[in-house]
Image 1 (spheres, rainbow, N blue to C red):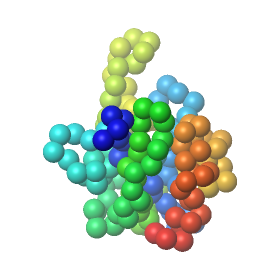
Image 2 (image 1 turned 45 degrees about the vertical axis):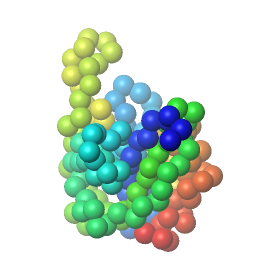
Image 3 (image 1 turned 135 degrees about the vertical axis):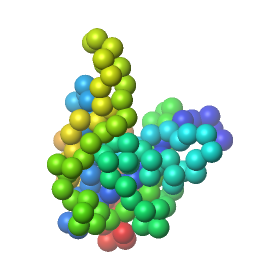
Length: 149
């Protein structure tokens, strides 16, 4: 292994090919639900757990398409899976985040994610971090993924 952290995540697409992005609390960027694995988890299990923790959406493992590992940042790679949202997963007003961290301002525990949106591939750059926007703009085409999932 190359010593990089590996975050596992799910690229969840709606029927129109928009991607689910979650707003990282206290920042100005949005991200796909992802995070580091816990001891004993497979990459798929990590991705599924992160999806539940950051959105409240529970996806059956049989729906995942393994996209593989991608260079993301100098210190981190992503192992990504894709899935198509079903009808019961489209209403983002039901989303909630149970993953908490201490606020930089006062140490109060706050949710890691605080808003969710379906974002068209052409609009991802306006929401996502540079690293995620670059990944979707070069290596992992959301339009091609829409045709594949």
